[in-house]
Length: 398
Image 1 (cartoon, rainbow, N blue to C red):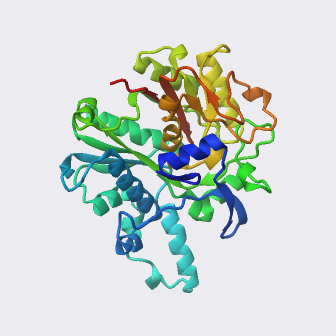
Image 2 (image 1 turned 120 degrees about the horizontal axis):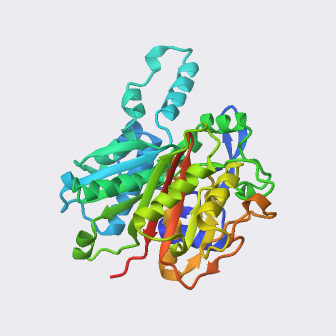
């Protein structure tokens, strides 16, 4: 994984527990200074300089995350059956960044079409990020990129899970990536909606649930997980961070951007039903809340499912890293997985005055909180055009 708050789970988790934000000011073409989350990773650890020149930002992030995930899982590609490894990368959008860059280059050359890159087509096709992983790591199993808006990080994990259950692969690389903070387009879109976060102190710009929240902080990042069937992971002595328990995906069918709390509640309830558990079994709810009016809708949905006496502790990771779009679901889930071992729930930061409409029970604000039991974590990840996903992970017990 790579995030604005650090690379690798150990560093990421340490910053979440210490309350360290990864947001800073950057200069963006056409917009000037904006608050953003930018990941910093070694692009050439798992790909050559030639491959990087031909490839994309999203492909580079996906390759880095895949290579690091496989190494962490103890899977040696030289010994593995690469035809039985699948790559399932969630993303909010792909291709627009490459087109922005090409149009800018075209303008610099007086609109001379001869300067349009011959790499543009393979760079901008939808399967590119997952495809670059297979090219760089020589993986010959299935690959594709899942366009799931800001629910995509969860969807990459869910789809990898499904492919394992169908025995299409033995190893699935599942999760999501985001390249959104490289060019002006996404920033400009949120600003036009009146939903681009601003703050003189960038570390305080991402403030879900706060009464004075003023929008989204756009971020880059990536997180891919190695998924296996339990018997295989046990047989090779893998370190198991958690066991997938339940998921659900549905659609609001009501608005392009405004969430629907009824459908979000149905999504969480569906995941609980698939996992075969009750709301009272959940110990941590990691929220999708972005620092917009949509935070209220999610809090309404949580109350509908969990009531006002829930024992679940509720937190938010975007307050540290901003909105990593296609990577959000997987990054935010992974940041909470160590709670199975340390029984500590990382907080939500930057909540100075809680919006009364976001006052859900056990919202962890400011400092980490110890919890006697952490057996189930529920992760919400919702996207534009009303795409909802909920993923539940349980503690692995040998």
